[in-house]
Image 1 (tube, rainbow, N blue to C red):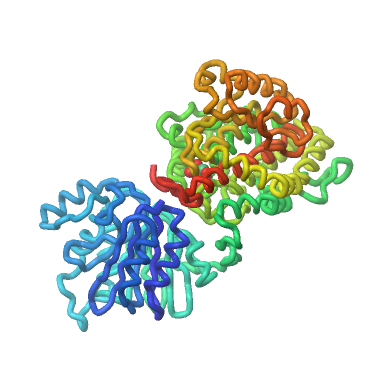
Image 2 (cartoon, rainbow, N blue to C red):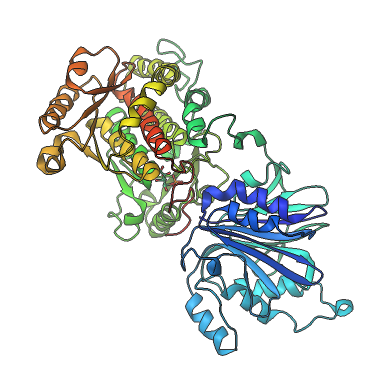
Length: 633
Ligand code: F6R
């Protein structure tokens, strides 16, 4: 939530900052701003709304400054107005700050600063920070006598007064050769160039400039100068840190001819599913031979699954939906009782502590504040207990370099590549693959499935990328046409049962978040217990009817909806005659074993949501009020 960037070097800062913000705009787009330093002054330009408003303002001026900071905002404290946009300056205009996070004790700090004469111009929590720093700076430094550590020390004193989770980039009028950045429970990475240095909330903004990257850890701050980077902890002790080299290619963050990132990411799904399977399925394993080998290699240590009695999964949003499919797989394949909790609820009403429990945090970004805090809490509350009650924490994420990695013991990397569209698509299907692999791994270790059954499932999984390709090739046009009919629709219902109930939830979430159409996902059998009262000719019902244990039931539930005049859309196999008679419209998918069907069923639902939103002329990749990385509680 919120994206911050910074630059110090020999190039004109404005263009670099804007390009960085463009890559971070997925994190929030309520307002944007940059501040640069030249001739002993801070120059700050801000604009409400999307980045192009700021770009337009900046086009009207000439600015050769070679140091600056920038921000794209997802509003927390204060309305999305220009006066609340970052950067924020102290009342003496000496210090400029951009922040991603929340300062919990800002009220008390603001009162204190006000009593000392500071005037505040915004409603934000951030504005206390430049004012505090300015208080700690020497009054008016004389250049020759200037204490070289004064700015650094002022920031250090300030961060020790802040409570909350925050990442900061700070510039000061009187210190034109220094940029200071801080990380405390909100992401921040530094990019190393030749005589120039960058910082950003996310490495996607750094890869066009450099692959040498250092991700700061919590409680660290760094001074960037044209000569190098010095890292310190909050007590002022210098730390020895080296950048690592990323294997990322800058082209990962291009649209490659697609109209939107979301569509491109939907089309990347066959490849990322293939990648993930290649990484985690042991190609040399066969049911009849190789008894020494494991079918799955997630690289997890045996102690994670020793005497395992229970699993609890903590997640939010789409990751929570993937976890519901995960629960089904872990229970049905590995026989382990599994609970799935919304991380935001778990934090305040945790389940009773049980022994030999594996806790899995699922978060594609690895930065979702609720999920991280729930995991921290779990770690904390178990830390003083007997060994069998100790926390065993596993993370599942698409960003193994994220904060999640510093909390959990082990990680499953879902390897989907960077996802820019705010609506999760390819990262969802790779989370599902992560759960198939985990469930099969545990099933193998616990002996709950025969080798031949494991092999059968693996063969089915290996066919999925080809099936997804078929859906994309054959159905996209059909779905695009169908979407035209629903451009004005106000309500949608999605129904599914068993392993496809979470897919009904996910289909509804995709539609609401990008098309702003009200949509609900229900277990098909629950419709008659209330929601069926909503149905009439104006409310289409999308039923996920995949052959298997609950197929007939779903079709009957769909018939019940049709009898109430609802237009029925079936996500169902291509050649199903019964389905062809039942449904008004079909979103056909290849027929696969029911256990594997969620990965196919979700694809037409993603396309349906995409095309309805695109038809309505909406900003598919950056839907209103949302942000890709939700780093506030
Ligand atoms: C929906 C979506 C959100 C996220 C949720 C959790 O398309 O993207 O619902 O799934 O904010 O995010 P992560 O997985 O990063 O923890």
